[in-house]
Image 1: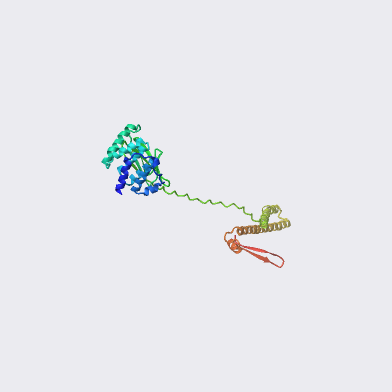
Image 2 (image 1 turned 120 degrees about the vertical axis):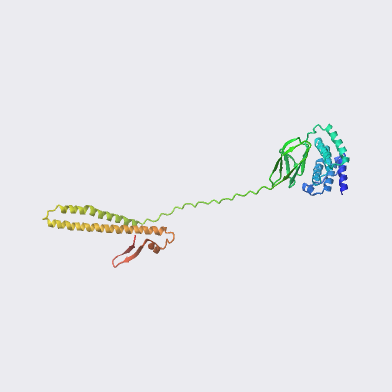
Length: 345
């Protein structure tokens, strides 16, 4: 097998270009299939492409074979393929790379040097100051390579004959973070750029904060007005006011009249005294009645309030009575009926 590979390499290197029409068209081969092929298969596929005049395809397969098992004869065949493709400058770079290779075969160096010397005279674009080869590798393979944003090819690939200087290299592959590097191209020197592509860190999806809808404000229905309780408060207030009138106006007036009587006016004095006592009784009765009416109306309103707003036992009237210290009980007599309100405030 080794002998067959060497023969194929040597034949490619020494054979002049054959007519493209004399070869059988190549079956399409994917890059993955090429990557999985062994050296012998790649060399055979490159030879078939070369003989079919598909020099770009032959170059691609030769370079891939050289990645698997470096061999200077592969570089010589690449140089020959570039020459047949009309790329004089790049072909001379590969001729020079073959001649510089420490493992180059002595019997082939002379012919390569002859081709290099002849090419220098014919190739106006070639310069001794051109750089050597820049080889691009990546893991995973088949990543796109750009030099100063110009597409070069997909890995594994290489670029030869570049003008010395500094270049920006970018290697990218869908689903992986871009690899960027600045390289320095030196005249007649080879270099390798290896890109280990990494998957970008997974972006944490922002957790959507649920929107809490504010409950619509429900207008509470107003509590029914306890007119009776307010009536009791009003009546009690009037009763207290009446007591104050008698206590502060009427009774002092009677006292003033008594003070003006003569000592012998005993009958008039006794009459005023009785009147004063009567008015005092009215004042006391007004105070008592007013106090009871106000207490009853206030207690009733408080009872209603606690009934409507109690959070724990709104329907438990006994609990409300215990909380307020109130006791409401019916009072039924022979000729009247009512209720008794008792407790402490």
